[in-house]
Length: 411
Ligand code: SF4
Image (cartoon, rainbow, N blue to C red; front, side, top):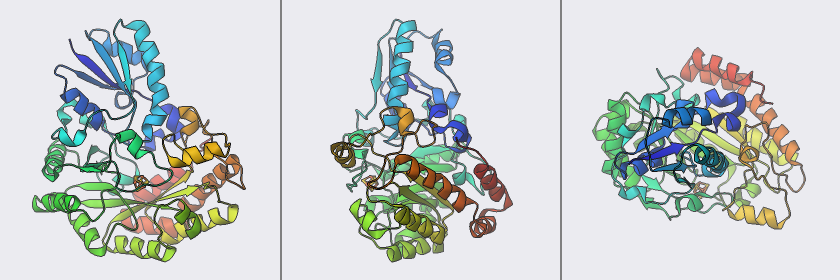
């Protein structure tokens, strides 16, 4: 009898009124799990828009011997946010079906050794790119692939190794090409390179890029990937762009150099940040700048420095987060030792949930940090200089979308 692999749906709780702007990610890990088990079925509750009742209806005529709930999205921190949804669902499913239900919230296999991604197990038209990723594109089709797992770096607030249960490991570049060809032949051109860090000097990254370029796919696809300020060069950026990487997401984190250095996310200066951002723009790659408010040493002045840097860099998209302190990171242990009241439930971890619980700094309450983040979001995205740059780059449609986005009342 088959197994059913389920991705729980916690989108509404996590994103509240902005869920339509977020991506619906292809559950690559689930598809691998399903590949290893003949006759298995995948139910992606998030993509299919199912709640618990919907899942029961979906399964009522299927005979199964086990239900496996994978509490994770494509980003490792999602396992923390989705574990609770999976546990809730486990109880509900067990009460109705007389079958064992297992919850997995970390990778328990090595996906670099499992061949090409079996997209045929997924209903690809159900997946949707982030709003920003598809600006200037004809659709929000979406798919994901990866060329590595885990990360060669060790940042304080990061829990990726905990999720992967593995150190950094690369995949055969030819498999990445195979994945992308499969996506493109299914009409999917907006693609997430799921690697925690794709844009770095590594022969694997260069090989993937060269394969995509040689196949002419660089002209076709719209890939987004993670980069670091200290891992790219002018030459690498050109190579990435020729391979169809049109968006890079950088963790800039803070505008205050001492705070950034304290978080161990690179010892780079603001001048270095400015020059790499300019280099990326010159390579015709759009940028997602990621910033964080609420480092332990943050004050209103240092958070203002961060916002000023973001405005000065004027990236095509900026994410402003409150500091996340996830179990499994060194920062989590430090904050616990300081006696800080940390989030516990998935909603308390979810940045856009009305029940989000921001962590305090040495000088500010969590609420003060969150209020600053929300004001920063409006100030950034309503800035006339930013909107004019976006109009020039992606057209008036993107500008209208941004205006609609900033008009949403979060809480
Ligand atoms: S570079 Fe990114 S993925 Fe790697 S350890 Fe740092 S935060 Fe985590």
